Picture (cartoon, rainbow, N blue to C red):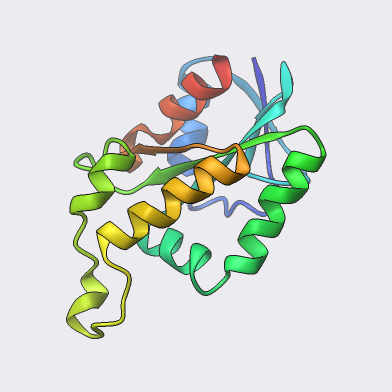
Length: 151
């Protein structure tokens, strides 16, 4: 397997991912992708977009909603299945676990997105835009990328 990494990924942020690729003997190179962050050359129609945590996802689907949906639409128009890998923590394993997530911003603002509201937003996006949200602990991101791209 050879994985293409989007050139906009910050080297410091993906150091552990690169180490995992190297440890597993996975070839990789950096080049701009039209959407997402990781793609296997074996299947250019399946791309992973990595997200740092649920706070980043909240920002993407609320404040940057139009841009976020535009990227999904563009991927669909090109025949690409764009999925999201969210590096939150070991206690968020799937979309249902988002229901119980406590947004730390709720302490500062009662208008911040709750776990229940985020779950509803992400569920609707999955249904309407042929995507999927996957979750992992940051220490397992490289393994999860290899696993998803290898399917």
